[in-house]
Length: 594
Image 1 (tube, rainbow, N blue to C red):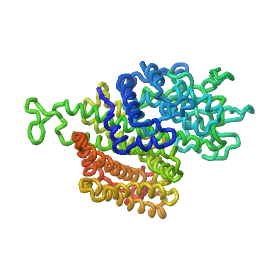
Image 2 (image 1 turned 135 degrees about the vertical axis):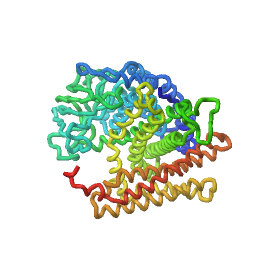
Image 3 (image 1 turned 30 degrees about the vertical axis):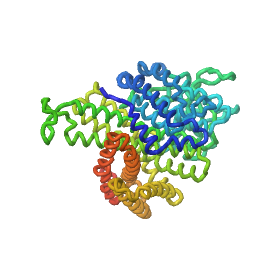
Image 4 (image 1 turned 90 degrees about the horizontal axis):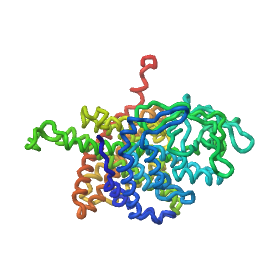
């Protein structure tokens, strides 16, 4: 069986010791109550829910899966009751506006809540995770009437929110979608089309569904400039606010997936369903990105969540399973063999997992802290810089955390050997479940292309330059700290190498149209390792400050940080060489030769 204990100590270390989040957040308008004590209390309560309610039904939910009959979806045993407890605890509206029943707490806190929920039960956590994105989109773009009617129900968790983008012929290229919306003459529209891969499109845990659907108006221009967004409820509202008849929208089928089997994925048919425009005509894609940017960071957290469970489970197994003897002689002479944690290969897999997960968690908290600053800070220049950092880090958080999530779950399965491959131990579920995170909310290659093709080029590299200043400020602050040199020196070298390869890529793309596409994935990984090195420097600085009060924790942090700098960060040298090889090696082979 897998094992999971919420890493509260690690979360609090990053939140309080590394970033001093409480002081920064309470200084922002509306966050006066987000003190360290309040955030710690929220984390404690969520940990109880995750360990006691959500985690125990994770493996059984995978084994049972979701079923559909006559267009109605039934979730696995225990899910409906667990979701009800989740919703009644106010977790669906943790960051939502108090005007609509939310708690108004920071995204910085919510990213840690979302991580532990994902670790406990990735499938169940996706349902309310999607609703949060719907809340954001309606809060930003909805009419006063839409907000007052829909937001309280979404915030309470009584209703489910979804995003309906993909069609069978139109995946990442949304400019090809064919769904139509025709005005009814009364302010509503008749929406017709079929959407696929719709997470939470139909299920039995909520009273109603609120679908945000991308479709084209009759006068829509071609391509992405002709997409509008519509709110299409499963049950139509009555004049008094109650739910009326079912709308002309239904689940036609559910997908039989590799993983995430307790999270339903539907084919949704809209047959002249009544809907209402959200935002401006033909501006639906921009509106959907209000939701999608939130979800991309959320999905990055899902990658971290599965890697954390895999690490904990593999570490527990490695300390218990005996096999062979330590190279330097028996570590447990009283036993027939030593626990496999004595072997370098096992140690290497576990150390890699821990070094990456701890860096990803820190980077994610820092990114969400900037989300809150971008939304709330009084100074426009500070808000802009924070928004820039969020924009730059979103593809890195999403792609690195999910890509490494797959790599780490596979490596940790290998620690269990044959037992990892057997269903009853639960490790193979982690491998299957995490795999979708590299695909949905924009594949990881799309994230990489967004980074090299758009984010680096904004206003002559303003975002990249802004992040380089963050790193430079760190290095200047720590200059002369001999106890930090073994960490700051590799960071400085990595940043210089990243700057050099970035300049090479920009120059190469002037003569080779495939240069950025060929480099994108390797460049994003190289950038990711460099950002991890930066946050590791910040964590080591904080750990050294805690050395006198918590020497064991600080010593462990230094060991893991050294591992990252000495055995992980050097991989950027190989990535640098691969990037500079250009597009020739992959583009030269004739199409017919494949």
